[in-house]
Length: 416
Ligand code: CAO
Image (cartoon, rainbow, N blue to C red; front, side, top):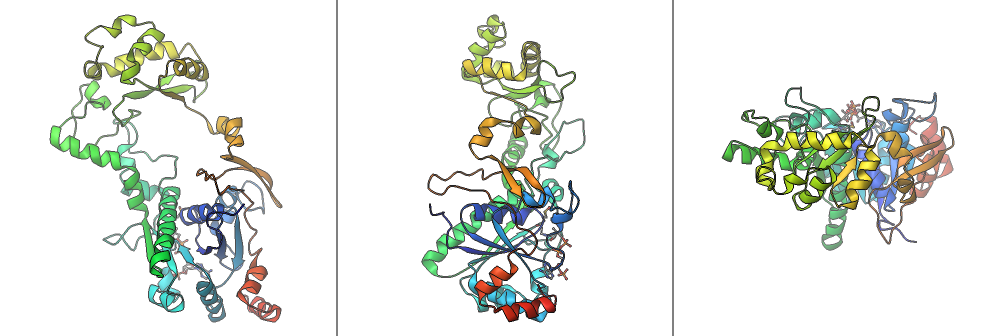
């Protein structure tokens, strides 16, 4: 079967997480992704958070599937020449170096355009143009500057970052969309272009609803679905942290389930969706709430939400989260168990869909990874292991037109 991006060649100049997330997706859609790594060192993540001595870390392997790896010292003149050849023969260059690094290497946008006017140059940076444009940025910095941290956590605690890598992987996803869009436009214009995804912007995009709430707060001074309203607390000038409140029009909260005293994940997320209010009351044995004017309408329930959740919790605490899920689903009541990573790793349905995949690696052996979360009906994803450092250097250079002697000379010079 052909793949959606077959024929697209990517010069993958990315490292750590944000850029590699993007190029891994493109590889899964069929692009030929050539990862260019520092000679002798490679992507720093190969050696970070190692669980097996001398084997590429899971950090690296789980972000670099389906790619080829070449080593290249792009600061040496002959290394620059190889990079120039790559630029001429690739469709897209993806990079996430610190601001200015590519320019310092001698590969400005203008220079790249000279070499290949069709080249799309896609970058992740911490910030877009402005006061912080020269700053280096990692995941949690983006979560803090993009609005996620100030709106995550409980209002009596400090700002919190989330485990979901919305700064790195979230930005990589945004960049991938920018790249395929630029490839589509190039079909019509014949020209390349620059694609920029700033981590602050990507996080803010994912926090869109919180900017919505900021404006609601400024207009009305109150947000009735926030726990602060239910608890009678006053709102400040900025959107407060809302704990586990739903963030949407239907109120929700995390409720304890059987075993919560010893299992930190024995919880269910429960949504008091208005259309199924009658069913909720029946299931928890509070049928009088169906007609009681203090509870019968969403408006009447708002100031009583915490009391309602506490009552529902008395019921959920008598059952496991999976039992609660089964019962509530029978009545179409939206809910979801808090799944631990252990439970997710062992979930058969996620294996069946290719969302969790077991991969075999020649050095580290078998490991689990997250497969392609985006399923195309006409471009199936087959997850193949990440490359060893420089595994494809000779193969790629030969494809670029380098003779065996020329490759040997580059190796002698420690350029590759
Ligand atoms: N050959 C020779 N030199 C190379 C090379 C190669 N193949 N690949 C990279 N280099 C050089 C760069 O040119 C740069 O040199 P200069 O500092 O002299 O310009 C140097 O390696 C270091 O690159 P860097 O500054 O990008 O790396 P860092 O480890 O210091 O910083 C990071 C890492 C992530 C903070 C920074 O790259 C960054 O801010 N990137 C943009 C935002 C981003 O993607 N952050 C997400 C990271 S994932 O959590």
